[in-house]
Length: 98
Image (cartoon, rainbow, N blue to C red; front, top):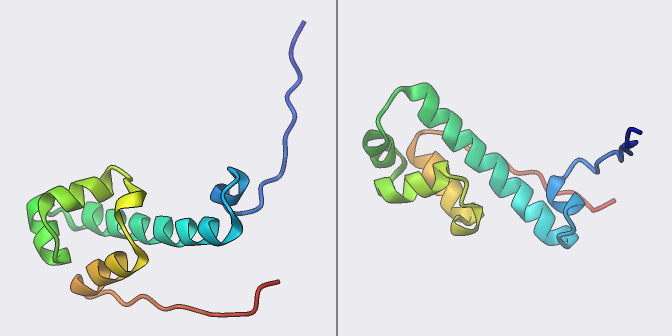
């Protein structure tokens, strides 16, 4: 006998789907997006972690924590600053919640 699986459509925010409060889920999603951008920048650059860390204005151990996905260690402000050091610009949109 085979088990039937049930699919549930996600909300578009995995953190909300995991049960985080709405404001925290939104913050985590934003931080996750920026961390992915930093990781892609490092990977695509071909730089060593030491070189990339210098470019991003952080230490190599700090960059390593980001590359390992330690989201709790990084604020939005820290991630925006890292990207700015690398010559990137982060834009934000503020709108009334639905």
